[in-house]
Length: 80
Image (tube, rainbow, N blue to C red; front, side, top):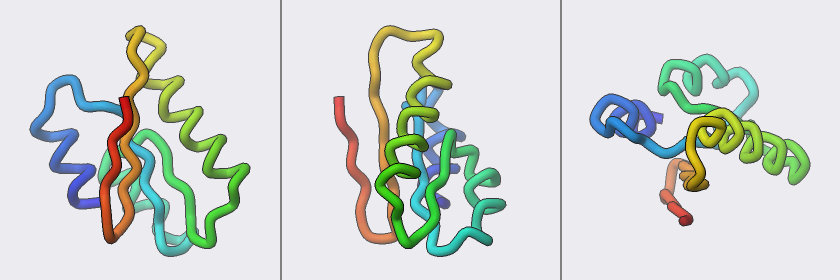
């Protein structure tokens, strides 16, 4: 979540970020990080799809390109 906040602070056109949290109570950390969406662990496939769709929809309503980043405590993936 620290990485998500740093990306939002340092990149003007930052892609949407979906944060995977360790538990539902960590949702406030996701909002602090300014991520577009958060999904708690254990991961529900429907919630993950819904969260990624919501993150892209919020960001891409003004743009044509869809780019999203998923951040967990171990790795970051970016897909174009």
